[in-house]
Image (cartoon, rainbow, N blue to C red; front, top):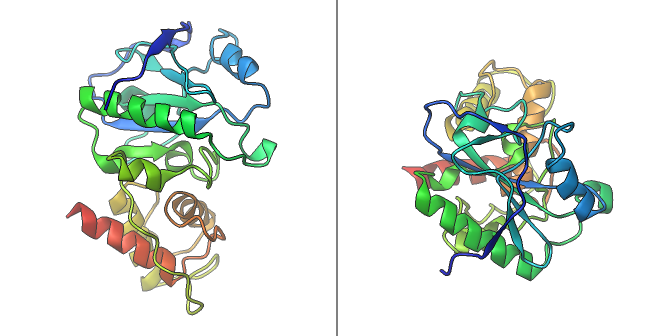
Length: 244
């Protein structure tokens, strides 16, 4: 795939990386009604936020921070038991109004640019397929981006990210807030094994609800209800089996 043409639009908001290798590619939406305003905010020293790249709706790509520097895009987050996601990740902001703007679809030109950019990034860093993530994956309950309309399946078909066809939704027994016991513990253990930041306590608490919701938003977007039904569990099990 041809590497995207990348323009320069430097942001002052970055710092030193730790010695951890770059092994996460984190995708965001801007969630602001005006793309120019979003870009300006990512480059404003008062904001204390940034990303490595910014992808406009027409497919243009801007680099805000060098990949060798630690951009400030993940915030309070965790994946695979490690909380300093910024030091181990490349962040891509995708211009989209998100939930505040009614969750509009991502234009084809923009997604084509995202795919090309992701190919270029993973070609430079040892990023596993299951470490191509959304902000909501590493910050469940706090962040919703890039949202349930982000075309993860399309990226996976192009060789970017980890995805399986979601298991069909069939009404039946499910786990939900307030449940407890061995089945909840097993669910939490599987989510933690995949990488989500969750304690294996056996209690379906607020954190478990947030993580299940984030998982559904990424991998089973047809129904996002925080209920760990058979479809959610089967999809999770198939994802883990595909990693073996």
